[in-house]
Length: 445
Ligand SMILES: Nc1ncnc2c1ncn2[C@@H]1O[C@H](COP(=O)(O)OP(=O)(O)O)[C@@H](O)[C@H]1O
Ligand SMILES: [Mg+2]
Image (cartoon, rainbow, N blue to C red):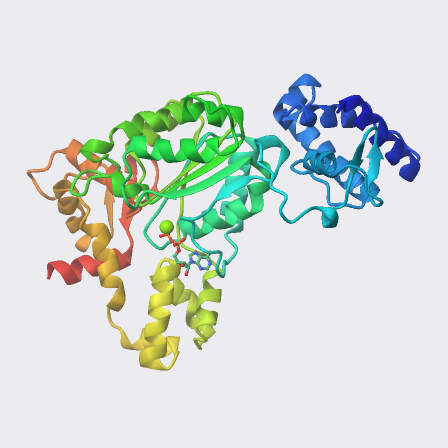
């Protein structure tokens, strides 16, 4: 099969239907895709921007879809031709030189096509990913992540935040919106603590399904194709009882692996999801490598939808309830169930009866975070029982603590999403949310 024949035929069909010929960029896009180039390479070869080529390609697929009456896209334009090669002439097929393009319905159900990255739909393994359930907006977080991935081509992204805050669901929603941009997409939970070599083997096997001969390293695959790899539950590889984001002894190699992903040139993106921000990520950010971090916080106005889904009443009191529980979707779901169980859904009654912040079923969840703290952090956080905020300039309440120990502990508590900075500069103030204060009071009383 000759690309020139395909171009001539396609041009003829487009001209018959629209009265216009394909322009040189449209032909270059077809030619580039034919040669397994991606949009970056096509853009570079034609001295155009990636965005421009992508936009023109999108228009081209739309035009060709109208012309051949099939849903044409980058991923299937030449697999259609491959089909035609297999089935030859058919009454409903369109001839291109000595080839025919047939419609989808004429393909054999037994037809098996071994996909290659650039000529097929993305190859996706979402076995470990959560189901796409009811999802409330997070518009600004999704916009930020899409900007980092699609426009800035960030190579390593970390999403961290408290358990149940919505990290996995947000990422699941994100990949639904961007999956057509990738050749490969894999979601792997690290909750079973795979060693780095076992993870690399799994990734290698996944990529090698359609990439023969296989490539020597994971970075080679990330360079060769557009891959999106999500590594969820990373905090399972961190030590408990130490400052945040410190790897367990047998998992320190992950640090080097993530450094390579951020520093080496490639066209892929790896997303890390964790309760804690890994220490090396902070260093990579400081070194200005291709690394971004999103600290995921609670829902704002959309948190009301959670309360609505539980059919709570007294909607004028909902903002107060949301504020009290930090807009945290899982906590709000739990508290809403309690309000239904004990107060027939009345938020006013619930708020008026509880003198302190009611924790109930949240206790084990809060404990799962606090039990991971180092001794130093435990000492510092217990000082928040009385003060809601601590200034960096303050002398530690415990005279045995040095100033630098206090700062390390504060930094680590921030990397766990427990403390929040509320004012900048010399008078940098750090605040513990009332819900944690309440839990500390309860625990240390
Ligand atoms: N944007 C959202 N809209 C609706 N519910 C949400 C949202 N984010 C999280 N949730 C609720 O919180 C639960 C936990 O979210 P998940 O993404 O698993 O948290 P994480 O990965 O941070 O531990 C979800 O199962 C869902 O019930
Ligand atoms: Mg999760």
